[in-house]
Image (cartoon, rainbow, N blue to C red):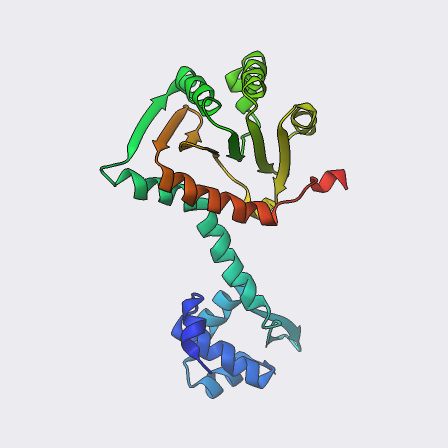
Length: 247
């Protein structure tokens, strides 16, 4: 058994020892686990509690005693998936930090509603496509419904294809509006991958938009565009064509 793999999943030395011991015993009391694993009872208790919190071990009561058993080992895959999900959520910001650190990057930061509006107008200028990941539900309200309509009119006039991946709880009336527009498609990100901020990618650069207060970090670089498009395409593969409530 390669214990290093379990360690890389975030299990401590005692957790691995207790987990593998319990896997061999199938079901056991704390005392039985402690003897077989050659650990102090208190260490076994601590390890069991952490394994329970990670969903790897369960227990039931028999004659007022807790009997522990290992959950289906497939649950270990969920630990890996959880780490992947956490990483995906911060990936845009990590990439922003990476490219901001390069002196050759053309980076601008605009703040406030006026800055956000200017950024969005620039994003549909001199480009054929615009990829958007995430959109907080209050974004249209903050920018102004009338202004957003003007923005889409400019996008459509420029024949910019609008690819949008939103969280699966995105308001139904907003979904209906987007589907009614020319040069637009929309998909839904499973809730475990919810995007907290908005990421925009066009042919020239990328923008990471924060709200409350508004701040837009704009980077104009082709290698950045390529990197973020790959990231977007990866998320697009796991996105849904319809929101769960539409099924």
